[in-house]
Amino acid sequence: MTTTTDRLVATKKAASEPGNCWVLTDSFGVDLDYGDGIFHFDTKTKAEERAEHEDLEHRPRRLDKPCVLVACSCCDYVFDEDEWTNHFESLDEARKVLPDFGWVPGENGTWRCEGCAKGTCDCEADRA
Ligand SMILES: [Zn+2]
Ligand SMILES: [Zn+2]
Ligand SMILES: [Zn+2]
Image (tube, rainbow, N blue to C red; front, side, top):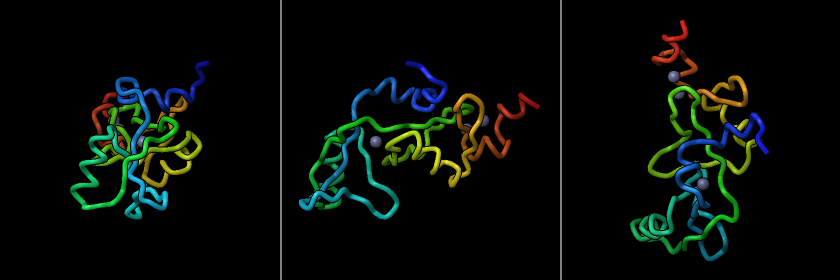
């Protein structure tokens, strides 16, 4: 079923890299979190490398469902795409969190990143 909100998850990354993320979990079942969100890794290897690098006891754990990724409808920037990624568990969570980072909802369930929303990018110039 296709709804307008499906566009939120239809990023290039999600399409090209199917499969659930990995997190690092300690022996108490607590996921690695430096207070800024839980770290997600694309692959088990990346998670293991991180644990080794930081000398952590954490072990990789595969999430039981895919994450929600949000890309800017204008510049394709993926929210929080960094050394590590902080993904959303659901579209509802994304809608709650994105405005705090300056992202602005557009038409048909799309979002624009802070930079684009401020109107400094090329696509905004095209529109003017
Ligand atoms: Zn994830
Ligand atoms: Zn953008
Ligand atoms: Zn833009």
